[in-house]
Length: 369
Image (tube, rainbow, N blue to C red; front, side):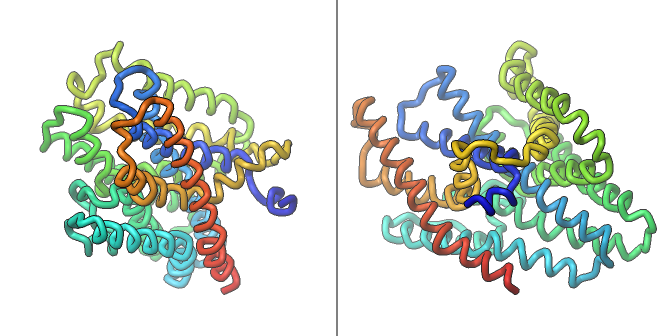
């Protein structure tokens, strides 16, 4: 444990652990009656924020990997496929295992699946909302197509033999961000959004409108390499700006009449990029928080490590199955609390098992190749 801890960055583990706990906390709401009070509303926001934080963190990670490779090496197709092989070994085995489990469970329960083949190619939410089956998979499609788009874009523009590769990297990232941001403008011009549920299904969760969320994390990685002194010197200021933006998004929307009914342009075009930028501002502070200063913090590392397994298992596999066999609508509040405790215990236990005996051995094998 000690040697492993020294190799990890505590701040990024903390952000990753926070992200998955926010996602899980939002789905705990399904156990309780619908409420518009502050805590349930906050937990719903946490569910959204958790995935957005994952996007920015993922972009920061792959951006750092690709930037170092792009700058130091002749970025060839071999470089592209090496990157893809490592990412696919990290993401695809878990995804396909849980996808097949979901299919088997749906078949057992008599649940019909629409466009099942699209899930194997990550096309279920490419240009329109996902079917109801395996709903949390929408974010994984966005991740996987970013893994394809970014290195191939770098490769083809790299053929121009531009000498300043740092500026070329920046040009690629900014151009791609603008493309997907403009997609939001197009969506806004063609659609009339009337409520958050419609926005959530038809914009927030659709691939062609969302890849810029990850690319903003990539942009932060570029900044960390090219403006390292500013990154470190002003990390506290950046964190304050990030938290300030998040505070505004939490408490400033209604007073400023920026609800989706009153200002659909803000939600369709600006809200998602602003959220991604807010989380990107947190990265300098947390990425420089490198050490585990106290053994009490070691569970953060564990939650961070098993976060991908938690994300895949916690909702469609565990919570929905539990609710099939246990009717929470008839439970007292005490029984609901106990149900929540059982649900969380099963989630973390099964996620650890999946990580320890499936995900980690595959990654170990990958690293030996």
